[in-house]
Amino acid sequence: MRDLVRRTPAPDPGTGPAGRDTAAVWVWRLVREPFTAETWRRTAYAVTALPVGVVCVPLALAGLPAGRWQRELARRLLGAEITGGRRAGLLHALGALPLNLITALVTLYGWSLVPMNLGWPLRAGGEATDAWGGPTFAGAWAFHAIVGGLGFLLLMPGVVRGLTGLQLRWARTALA
Image 1: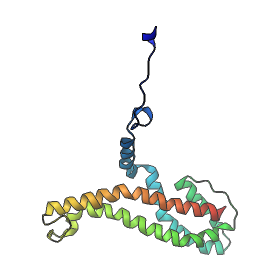
Image 2 (image 1 turned 180 degrees about the vertical axis):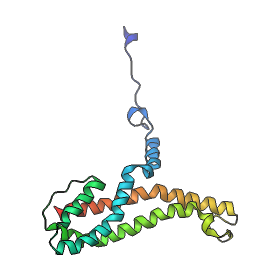
Image 3 (image 1 turned 90 degrees about the horizontal axis):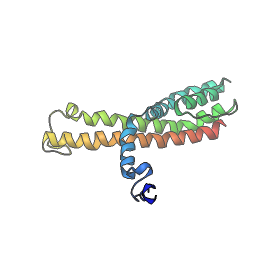
């Protein structure tokens, strides 16, 4: 009878749920993150929040429901339900302008570094002696592709997540 009872082995301290290695799960998430829809919705919000905020300032001054448009943008792209009054649009639009500007600039510049470094030979002009990874052309290309291209490809989803988290926190504070 004792032989019929199945015993589960004790979990290994280095493994997470279902026996998968915790480090492998984190690496998989890191590699997968640049290709998820959530990352690109957050990137779209980071870029479009600035022009929407700029347009909402005069619209809110004219008495139009600018807060509703800003809440709808956050709902569609970030999945955030923000309830609030009609007069909050001007406060949010004015207060968010510096953060939206920084977020848009960092997001656009960071994502532009990925193709710029992966396609380094197209902008290098054939000269690799002074480039990082040089003096050979292959070494300079490999350095730019790995550090600048793949490095920023893996880094930017976290940067965008952090910046849009700040934007969302301000939206919940100002639009509520």
